[in-house]
Image (cartoon, rainbow, N blue to C red):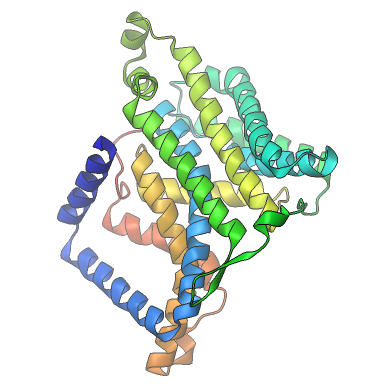
Length: 344
């Protein structure tokens, strides 16, 4: 209940602090979405669900990044590589060892979490309190190493395990049909993100880590083992990124390039949501996912209404996350729910 009230208060504060131009832009977006929903109802719903699935994957990877960056002050560029490893570990468990999907869905995130522990203990523990650029350079090097290791073991081509038979069908939503696996991805992602968000914001563990970042000496003075808590936090962030990779590889496959592709998107999501805000990362991930899938539909419908075919720009979806980031930063330089001066 307290998390719900806190989220509502943040949304109300965001609206109250928004400029008239921003509110007018939001109203225009709603009208454009309404027009698209009327013009192409089936396609709109299908894309909305696709955006929700994609957005939840972005939330899972960006949530882990936000935990490490916002709570621990380390810019972990290797987070995309951990997401990629989640996909590869899932493929290995299912294709190489013949274990079922359910086993892979448990083993892969734990395996990625263990890799995260190794990274935290061996590399990042030496960087706490240092300039963020040092952590960025160190983890960028780790990303390159993990990418090359993946190419050596699994090859440069994309790999994809066989989708479980009971998740291969579709669910009829009257105006369109949605893949069962997509609904499964949304369900698993929602439960995982809600559990992590609750752990960070409403338990002694999450509060002690946040206190340790603000005043480590005093936190350890009252008996909190901060190195152990930080390692556990890094395991949690790595495991949820690995779970995101595990869910994605079954439907779309994975290749070594996914490490850099998704870590860039994760940084975009964290910047939009606001560095240091877990709630902001969740909201921004959904915003980017929906925008990337729905903007082409909106433009297509607008082209039909206005008769101007040039409005329907092909290939625009790849630019949408960065356009959303620029738009948000122009209105709110610290992001939607960011904390000013967090990394200063």
